[in-house]
Image: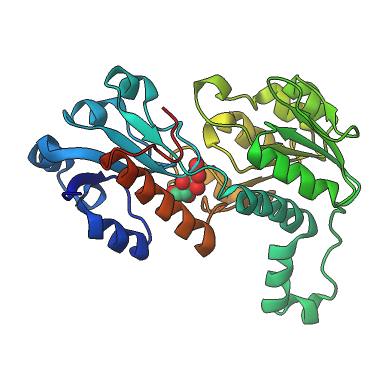
Length: 315
Ligand code: 8YV
């Protein structure tokens, strides 16, 4: 296979960049100072794009690449890729599903446990000397046996539910339709009604227009002053303004968030709050998973340019 020119939208781990550069000519868009000049210089040679779930590829960039054939996403979420623009040009799009599911579920449950049991604050209490000076750390919130609501019982939502079931928690879920699940899990179609009967509400839906602000002011209020919202999906699924106002006024008890509007430059109001756990979009961030994600990105590109079937096509 002659080396094909690939536009790389965002950095990958070093090992992935080296592996990609073995079979492709990489054009690092992320390090270009003048991005427009960079694109006009390489646009005519670009046949593939390597991007990330949090970065995607918008219509302007797609339209600026006349010979683009495939967009390979490092991530399961492709909501940041303009699929309509890709379809109009029969451009293929791939993602990296399944291989990150369990790590993302682990991380969501870890955030629930860490925020409820004050694990980060506890570490601080010890390191700051408060334990010896002020005595025992304040008591925190029990997790096992509580009620969990899962918004979006897809691959990640199902794995979160399984893990919570192991904590003897009551499981309820909302999705477009009922799913094949254990009898004791209940289906509640309406997100507000689901929030109303949940102590913990996990947001595990895909991102995009269809689920934008599915967690709105009413849903947040229904979750209530004792409730916790946990988001390991996309910030766009939550009305962030309503969330901030509810956390500031304690209408909502607390939140544990891995994704933010405008990340990594999140709204500074979050930094003022003591009832929110903030994480840097790392739910799939394990070496094992990222190696597998990089591998799948390359395999999809190599398959396409070798005329073989794509491994994980979106379109
Ligand atoms: C990112 C994600 O792709 O899988 C997704 O959709 O959002 C993440 O796994 C990853 O953080 C790389 O940026």
